Image 1: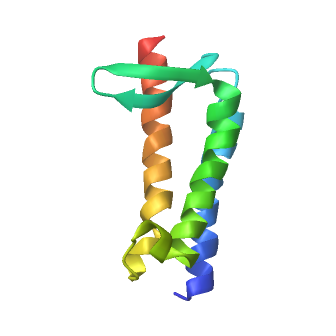
Image 2: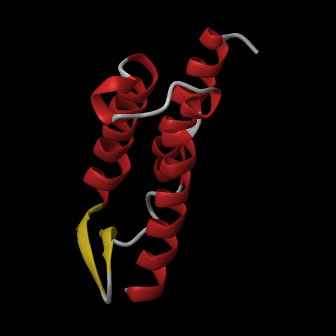
Length: 102
């Protein structure tokens, strides 16, 4: 797979929570879990979690792919998938915990 395709697919995966959050908008509670610390959760409005956080993850994805030296990221093939996987896991956990804690 070419570098360009990896970047495009990774970017789409980073932005998938916007689609999922928009579909589930009415089912989600008004406040979603945004930070998971040892023993506590921090909540934010669902608009911020659904629309702002994916763009933050996308920005970090671009930094890891195009400027890996800034974050001391190794220049290997795995770097294309760090943020897409983390972003997906973050939102699955956030949505699940939001239902459980509310």
